[in-house]
Amino acid sequence: MTTAALVRLDRVSMAYGRGDAAIHAVEQVSLEIHKGEFIAVVGPSGCGKSSLLRLISGLHPPLAGILTVEGKPVAGPIKSVGMVFQNSNLLPWRKVVDNVLLPLEIVEPHRSRIRRERRSYREKSIELLESVGLSGFTEKFPWQLSGGMQQRASICRALIHEPEILMLDEPFGALDAFTREDLWCLLRDLQAARAVTVMLVTHDLREAVFLADTVYVMSNRPGRIVKRLDVSIGRPRDIEVTYSTEFQAIVHELRGLIGRTVESVVEPD
Amino acid sequence: MDRREFTIKVVSPALFTLSLFLIWEAVCRLFHVPLTILPAASDVFAALWRYRAPIADNSLVTLWTTLAGFGIATAFGMALGIAVGWHRALYAGIYPVLVGFNSIPKVAVVPVLILWFGLGEVPAIMTAFLISFFPIVVNVATGLATTEPELEDVLRALGASKLDIMRKVGIPRSLPYFFGSLKVAITLAFVGSVVSETVGANKGIGKLMLDAQSAFQVPIVFAGLLVLAVLGIVLYAMTALIEQHFTRWAFRSQANF
Image 1 (cartoon, rainbow over the protein chains, first blue to last red):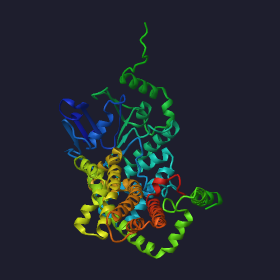
Image 2: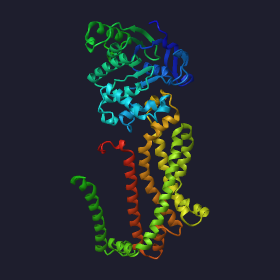
Image 3: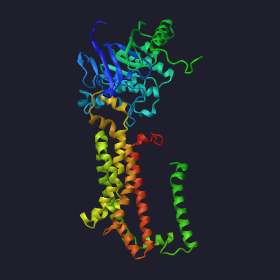
Image 4: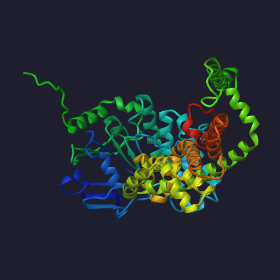
């Protein structure tokens, strides 16, 4: 890609805590995310994938290295980000539509407008909810929705303020296999329609390959990037593609890079 | 309310209360318990009716002091709870003092209050307040402190300030804790005002019971206890209703939307 990078990390490290007791979560990571790109970060659990996401969203400062978003160094939370976590984290006292409105009550310029233009903002979020198949559920409370529907609403909440980057931290980890595939397709279509930049953190290799343009593989803690892999499968991708040999080959290659898990606890004689 | 629910919610408590009084009555009559030890239920109700004017008069005073103390405790407890839940340093700093203060038996404080404010309603209000604000503080602070970090992250990632996070997440989330603590606080406030009245006051149910006791009017003492119990139930039910109204989302299994 020739466009300037939206996000750029240059040998960035990050640690929790200070001094000798600090736990190094991310080490010397360099990567670039371009506008409209869909990247996925995969790796074993506890490798620092989520830390990388917190780092880029500005929730946690880097220890060393340079981190820029739109050419500017990141000093605090960047507002042009929408986040989705494994738990939908919808506020149980708000109806679904009011949950989706939440970012607009925080982010300018909507923040100062929402009081006067509540109705039009409400319509906008209902439209968004309808586009992800939640028509008829907008006035329900989150706990009246299934896990998959809650996550759909959570994605709407992350998109409502039209962020530059959508950050997903194992968003479908708690869902069953069929619901998960439905949501893959939803995310695929949303990204295609809105041309939003996406960073997906996952340990599901099929998910990463199906959705992303570029997959980064992280090593065990402290997390380093050991491989950058372009997924050359053409778009739009159908769920059928996951059964193709090309797809399987990429997943297999990634699996090899993640490293061997302990296959048997008892050592054979 | 269908029939089954009516049986559970109305008939069963009524039956239970009634049988308690019947057993009380039966025990007193069967074993010829002297009036000065334990008057029978019928004696207590008779006293309640006969002295209804002074009992009502004094009950109103106790009710007023209790509610005033409870009101102050609610406002103060909520404010302090938010302050304590706001910052970990404040939490660490204030908490030991709070626990220490709460451990002081309030009956020991009443003479000091009387010394400061004189005999009257103020010591009762103050005691009700002092005894009932602690659970409110602790619950509000706990509600704030246990806010899920991911929930905060969602807002922080949008650039929300600490105040935004408090308003949008922290405070609504701690409301069930707050209202839950009100149920505890209201009964404690009652204990506070009556304790204060029995130590020194010129009016109130506690004072009435004290006077009746020194005159060996034991049925009046028990009539006072009965009134306190009824008032306690009424105030508890009121706070429970308010709680249900404001935190319906937290009672999802019972709510019918």
